[in-house]
Length: 103
Image (cartoon, rainbow, N blue to C red; front, side, top):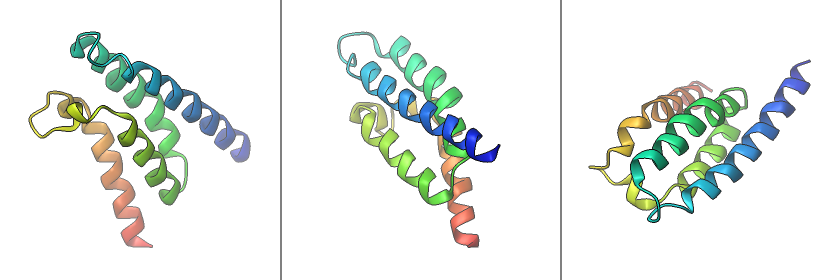
């Protein structure tokens, strides 16, 4: 059962990451507000994080780096409003960091 659950989340993460790449391709053409709400609020926080929570800490770090490399650089600047929406993502990374420190 655990293996079936894991493979489901692996497929969900892969499909979600492809969708995130497609959504972020519209950055600069569509207003950032609705685009970030779709990419970060709906996709990352609801679906991609679920896939990252059920895998090993090392795999979660690899997946997180794929997500970060997919996001437009302008969204990751210090004063960006997008960073406010990424609180759950940052919290998950801190949790994974604590898991890696404990082992």
